[in-house]
Length: 164
Image (cartoon, rainbow, N blue to C red; front, side, top):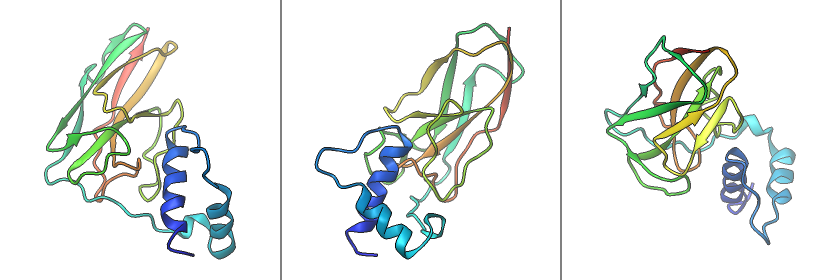
């Protein structure tokens, strides 16, 4: 794999993880072909940012076990980590991802982007969720500038909410 392939692949993975489109003039197919020809994607070790000492993620609201009406506010808490936008590389920083009824993802890959794995790459620290009636699990996971969990990964406790 060439020295040019890894950075381009990381850029493609980061854009894919947050639902972005390829910038004009970028040949996204080239690194994917090179990776498939040389090794399966799962065999590639992506670089992971070191977790800041004492970093902690937690959900401020709603409280664990709360019954809420949709839409409802979810406030993200953090300690000992600087919350920055995705794409901004700086030691000791990251951004939030909210997992809704989802297990923790593969820590060696960018966090998927879906209704279950919601990205807050703009540096947001709260959101409003609109969910159908039912019981849901919510959990926060920090990701670095490329949406890859830190080493070691930093995530909140799982809370449960019931939507009326």
